[in-house]
Amino acid sequence: MGLAGIGICDHNEVKGALEAVKAAKGMKDIVVIPGIEVSTELGHVLVYNVKESIPARLTVAETIEKGEDLGGYVVAAHPYRYWSGIGEEAVRANRFHTLEIHNGHARQVTNRKAEMLAKELGTAVSGGSDAHSLKMLGASYTEFSTRPESVEDVLEAIRKKRVTTGGKHYSNFQAFRTYSRSVIKWFTRGMKRM
Image (cartoon, rainbow, N blue to C red; front, side, top):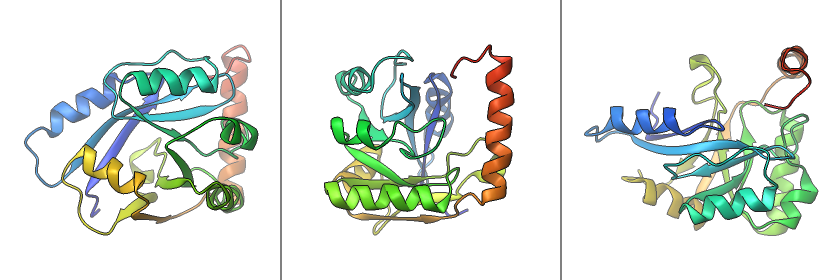
């Protein structure tokens, strides 16, 4: 696929990311970034470069603090996505390292709003496929001007705003189908968030 790196961020668990790092050890053509997609009380927050899980259901501020205490790089994931985004108010009220502006599981209109907010705030940006299946892998991405050789290279380039984002957005039909499935799963969980 031409990917130079991949961030593995399972929901509320870092174990799979650590397995991926171990499996990729010795490979020189790809950087595997361990991370976690934490379900805060409002929605999802990504924390890259961590080796321990962070509890779910904390406030956004507590999640950021825990992530930074673990040496993590904290990203506001798909902030405008209905159902799992933390929303604009939480982005403005907290200090994130980066704002995800291109998410493969978000509609173009919500990605565009995130991009406009990042410009207004002067925040570093990233993109990600948010792949829940192999066919979604690489759907959206962060593009680097030079090939990163390490996790630190990846995060430094993002921090210094030396990246662009690209890829696909969800169509209205895909969004409707996903939200419908999410509602069904929500009911089967007893109306509890993931």
